[in-house]
Structures are given as structure tokens and as C-alpha cells.
Length: 473
Image (cartoon, rainbow, N blue to C red; front, side):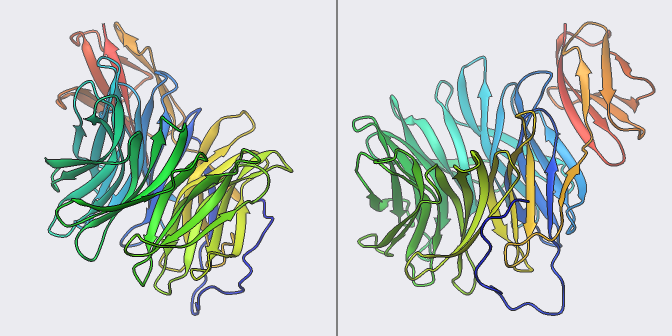
């Protein structure tokens, strides 16, 4: 781990009677991997989701991995049943029934459009439901999920359905079982997206997002408040010629909103980390703070406030001295937006934090991606103590890997795998029907009797399970 700044507070929290577990891991699933979202789960341990490239097919699939409190992998699952082409995870929550829910987007090469999706799985990774949302011919994506009062989900993103020729901020109401209920569209006069949505005390919603202004050619961050009927009460945005991104928000104890993102420096042309505090009625900018780490691009992607009203942000900063990107954590003074202490993480190549959350021991679980010597990205996972420190060295975790060839099969599927454990295989058609299930006794499976169609091949050992797609001629 490379450190330049350390947290300037000796102890951010009072902790006694136990030592905190810290770790720094990278996971190499394929040639291009990235963790998008992570959280500490009930009962201890962590759940992480992200995107992994299928090197055989060239498309991206969703992965979900579960870890114990020490950062040791319990199980890892790759989900290939969402779509035929690229699938991208964007956010993960633990639902009130104790399961996990992932949202994102899936592309369809046949129709050429993108749909939002929800994938719900059990605590052991078994799929409960997998649903896509959107209108054929329109591009749709989900960025964020939250459970709302009275049951159901508010899922936010972007859709071209709302206004022809433009993308609107998209809010979909969906039942707990994945049934679509209703949808609403918000934004300005350009291409709009909603990146985060939080329920407010009045059972309305507060949302942040971005509007791409076709007239000025810039990006405007926007903060939108809607009432319990989801009618817009007010919207806050800066209509300037400089790019401004709103990525995440938190609600402070007095009801004010703190929005984090980045603001373009029109002189230097780079992006600086931005913190904007807006009054609870949307009328007043309490402060707008810009942090320029160096002369390169900086971005805040997530924010968190704890029970003591301490504010934390994560993201990444450009180290222009070394020419690389570093993952970043900081603690913020809520009263004036000043950075009290910060720390960077990573090695000599590019490192990013895409998401972080607070843990029960007052530390942080952070995930993103780390570039390796070959210029490829691996999953990057960091657990810090309350001061942002890591007391262990980087550990490279070797994951179960397998490849199948050919993807367009006639008679035989060839399997290459990194494990020495006994493997079971399951052949599944696209309706979910199990066609064949057996122990893999060699590195070949005879598929000559299958009808011409697309199939799933699931490989499973005592420790790992992966699923692959192939087409039988």
C-alpha cells in the first residue's frame, strides 16, 4: 500500500476491548475485473459485486462474492443468465428479508438497446429472480436501489423512454418480488440520469444526478426533491459552462444535504473533488467546497455520515508526480467542508475506489479496481481500521478459473480449469431446465445429442461455482 497522507486525527472513534481486522486484497477473475459495490452483512462478513470479462466470449458478466470477517472468500458466483451480451452491475443492497439485490444494465445485441435489471439472490448465491425493465428500442439503466416505507423498491437510473431523443432521470417503483409497479421521469432539458435516491422523513425522496446540457456542452449536477406522491417539489443545479458531477449524497442531522462529486477547473481543464452542502428546503447553498489534490483529475464517488455526524468520502485522485491514479478516503468537517484528514491507497499503477461503507468496528470496507503490470484491472478490496490504516500487506487471492472451448460447439466441449478439486457439471437450457448433471471425469463433455440452441454449463467444486454460455450448432 502506498501512503502519502495519513489521517490527522489520532482516533476518530473510541474503541476498546478488541483489535480491528484489516486487509488489502486483489482478485484476478479474468483479463478485466472491477468491484462496484460492497457492504458488511448481517451476521458478519462482506458481500461484494462487480463485473468480470468473459475472455472467451469477450462480453461482461456479473460476479458476486461473499467473504468472512477476515476477508477470506466463502463463495463466488458468476451470473451469465441475465443477458446474452454485456451485463454490468451498479449497486448492491442487503434486503430486509436477509437476501441480496443487485441492479445494473444488460445489453441486447439483437435489439441494440440496453435494459435495466434486478438480480435477487440468497445468502448462498442462489438466484431468486432475475428481471429486466425497459421498453424495446430504448436505452435503460439502473444505478441505485433503496427499499421504501410500506414495502417495495425505488430504483433509479436513466431511460430514453421519457422524452424522445434524450435520456431522462428514471425512477421505477418495483415490488419486492420484482414486479414492475410504476415509473417517473425527472431532469432538465438535456440527457439526464439519477445516480442516488434516498427516502426522506416525509416519505418523499431526495435524488442526485447529472444533466448533460446539449446547448452549453457541459454537465450540470442536480439535486431533486419529490414528495410522497413522487411529484417534484424543487430542483437545484448550477447552469454554468463548467462540468459538475453529483455522484452521491447524505442527509445530515439537521436535514441539510451534502452532495459529493467533482467540478471542472476551467483554467486548468482538470476535475477537482467537490463538496456541496444545501439547505433542507433547497433554497440555500451553505457552502460549496472544491478540493484540488494535485493538478490532475480528482473525483468523489461516495459519502457516508455516522451517528456522530462525522462525514467520510471515498473516490480517487490523480497523482501527477507519479503519473498514476490513487484510491482515496477522507474525513470532512461537516460545519465548513474542510478536509480534516485523508489517505491514499494502491501501488504504482492506477487504483480506484468505486464504493465504500462503514463497518461495525468503525472501519471501512472499500472496493474498486487495481491495474496490474500488464495494464489489466483486478478487483481491489480494502478493509481499514477507524483511522483508515491497513496493518497487512497486499494479498493476491488466486480464484477458481476455468475456460470452455469452443463457444460454438458441434460435438465436444473442452474444459480447462485451475482447481484440483473434484468438479460437478450441469447442463442447463435457457428456460432453466436441467438437461444433464454429473461428475466431470475428464476435461471433455459430449454435447453431440443436444439440439441447436444456446445453453449454460455450470461447473462446481466444494469451494467454487462458475457458469458459462455456449451455443450448440
